[in-house]
Image: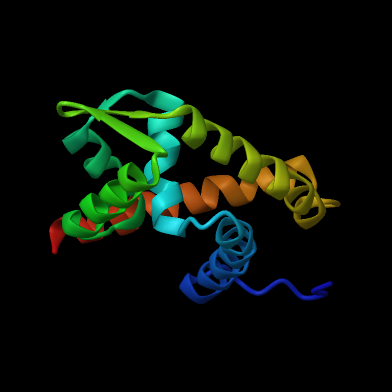
Length: 144
């Protein structure tokens, strides 16, 4: 365990992100799904059905990805039968919902171990700091 907390900066945030993402990607790879595909599948499961462009917008916003990459991920999910299209409306299939449930079930115990021993207060402080960093970084991106 780290004894001296480093001050939060982009490197510390990035290291935490990539470590947690690597855990998720190991689980996703067992299911034949990429991180970007999972990011596209989640809103269709949770908030769907969604207009195709709205779903693309959600993926672009979440990943700061190129819209063409978001369209590609959605197309791949459609081809795998995890999403279905009704005109411009995209919805998760039963297989898509089952996949997201399976990934969540597999990652839940790992997440519990990762966050074990971190107080609710520390998590709340970290959440506030990261929300502010995200807000400011998105404002900088918008200004570029």
